[in-house]
Every structure is written in structure tokens, then in C-alpha cells.
Length: 113
Length: 118
Image (cartoon, rainbow over all chains, first blue to last red; front, side, top):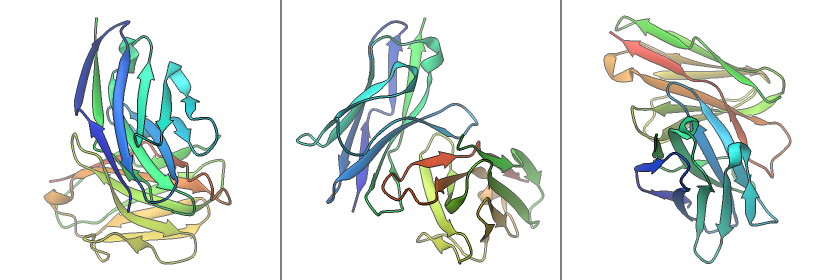
């Protein structure tokens, strides 16, 4: 079975500060990991994904995440927050041959001016 | 590329009526589509997995007769909420997987449909 835990339902940062959203996963098989962003009343947009290969993954809008197998983590970071980054972020896990994607509870990011 | 649309984007209906939501993959063929339900400030709950030309696979606790899913073509899946009640009010999101890329598992999401049952 697979599961995802996102630490912190709310994260608040100042504009220009580092963004760090935490995600830990549980999987009995090699995982595929995803980060999605959701703006109010909209669907989900893929920020980045890890399947195989390089463990540091770069995504859109300046976000990146690092797959750390030993820590079963896939934290999302961005060096400098923008006001437009304020949204809900979901970490998700899937696996080779598996159809289902399991989503974390989400972390709402607030960006203060 | 990989655009998924949903129609309608929002709908208000009376209790007891049925509502159909369409999910279309606009520029690719989707052998598998997923239907999710999202309550306010919560995560996505998978309702069912829909494969083209076959019956949908429902998650535990989801009523098959209430949430009818049809995936008649590689670009269209529909969710019909039958005899809707206020507790069915929610945000419904569909997603689609590109056929043939089984090793990736990336899903492309529609913009969602806000259903309000009065």
C-alpha cells in the first residue's frame, strides 16, 4: 500500500523568502512522486514529477524537489516566494504499473507582502 | 498539449434531479480517466477509474448506482449524479492518462465542476 503525508496544512512565508513544503511517502515498491498546485476553483496543475534517474527534479515556476529514498521524502522548495505562488499544493505517489495515484491532504501556502 | 476540459464548470440543481458532467481530453486519447471528489479545504478523493469501453471501477464506499460513469470513447467520459441531494454538493474533478505511457502515470486534470444541490 502507498500513502502520503504532508507536514503542515498551512505554511506562511514572506515574499522573497524560501518556500519549503514537506512530503513524506510510504511505498513498498519504487515510487513515482508528483507535486501538483491547485488555485481556487480550478483543477490541478503538475509542478514536477520524479519517476527514475536524477533525484533532484526541477519543475515549473522555479520549484524543485529532491527524492530522498533513505528519508522517504520528496520536499518541494523554491528559493524566493512570489505572491502568485499562494495556492494549495498536493504531493502524490504512484508506482510502476499502478493506475492509482494517492494524494496527500494538501498544504496551503500563504505569501505575505 | 494534454488538455482536459470539463463541462459544465458549475451547476446548480434541485434535489432529486440528475446532473451529467462531461470530461474530455482535447488533444490526446485517454484510455483511462479518473473521477475525483473534493470537499472544501480537503484533498482529492478518488471515486472511480474509468477505462474506455469497459465498466468503471469504483472505490470502496462510492455508490455505483448513484454515480454513473460512462467512458464511451477515448476522449470522453461522463459522470452522472443521479437523484442528487444536498450532500452530493461538491467539487468534482476528472483526470486522464495518456494511453500507452504506462510507466509514467502522469495524470492531466480538468478544471473541475462545482455542483450545488439545493
